[in-house]
Length: 80
Image (cartoon, rainbow, N blue to C red; front, side, top):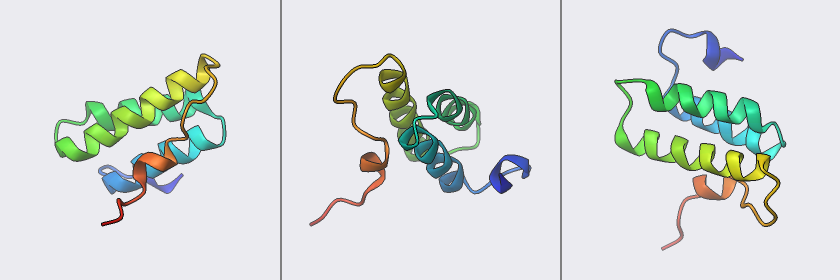
């Protein structure tokens, strides 16, 4: 993926990639990408928070818990 090879990829791309992996059932990949984002010292707290939520959804889905929400729902803008 393009965002994986860049020295400092656009943070939102990495979070969306993790979310896409989680939504596709590739939970190990989702966890790995989300953890990379969370470990970056220069990321904003908001980006790290979303990455943490995506990681948590992937962990729950990996454990086979029923009703685990896809991480994509976490990224949808709230309606006013």
